[in-house]
Image (cartoon, rainbow over all chains, first blue to last red; front, top):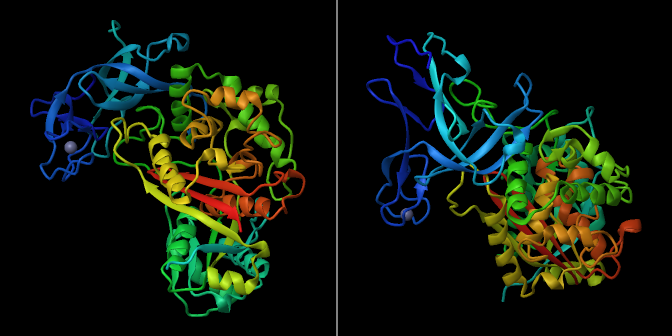
Length: 142
Length: 379
Ligand SMILES: [Zn+2]
């Protein structure tokens, strides 16, 4: 990752957390009452309405492809084509992302994939601070 | 005892592009057409429900009344994504059902922005492409691919929805696209998000539609000959789904609304003579065949292949041309679907008339999510 080591990078996606040491991770929330997993800290469980707020947990980086679309036309200025995917992470959270490093003929439901943190396309905020994003690659790839 | 609710007037302007007219003028025109159809005046309306997405904060209803008569009645402006129109009709239904009013009007009017419709940019770098696609074609492509992966549904079966609905639109003078599109043309048009091509995406147009709802007492006074009874008026919000909101689920919210509507109407899908459903993209129509119970899970591909959902088939779907070809002016869509059903139940749908139609269902789906289902019956 091409982050400036003197500046702590900022998350490019609401699901990304940056630890004190600058290392990124994915955090999700699980209801202790019904087990429902969500991507944000809600006031009560959105599945069972339990008033005990869902507890955070660190999410691993492996998962399986649930759905996908090869996108050929998007908003103006967005480079196409790219592969938009829905991934069920093995720990229970589902994420949308971009899948790289795979031939479209290899796309199938259940394809094992891995989440990789990246520099969010080299984006920086207006103070020059870099961002941390993520994408998916097939498992086994670097 | 609570009275049944009837539709006494229903009409819509032709969907298309109206660069020289304001959205509230389009709404005002549809309102006058529906009032004329009912034989009533704006002065007879106890309340006004006005629906729009892109002009939701503009006091659309009041602007409309400034065009056709400021009667001083309650005017409620409604926004609920693509389910806005159905939401306005449902609020009008509740108002009559409550006994407070004998006649109210629901109007949907929209001038869509041009180009691909999408969400607002959040913090940080623009997410599109970096984190998959948030565009509506990609979202509904992904929903369709789940069906394809599970049941083997083919690109050709999705494309047949566009062939069918474009064919239907050739018989609807108020539809925007009125041109046959053979399967080869649908498949060969620009690929937007696989498996969706451009001809499998809804038409981005302006439009307006209106319905006048009345109590049973008022319906009898006007004469029951042209009245349409609302057997069910249901609105649902999305229940928790493990993959939501990262993956939009068009299915569970529609199934929830459909189950409640069938229960309220006291009938099942086999009693329906026609359906107008939310074909924002061709993939969505097949998903909703199953969500609305027109066939069993996994059978939607075979249902479109059988021809049952084409005009002349056992359960014609989107004979108006649907959102794909009639067009999708967001806030007007849910009212226009109901206008289409009313025309068939009255036997006034011209070349696309479903013979002997007595009961019809109108469905819309709003991203975020909301689903509206209305079941109408010839009185
Ligand atoms: Zn819970």
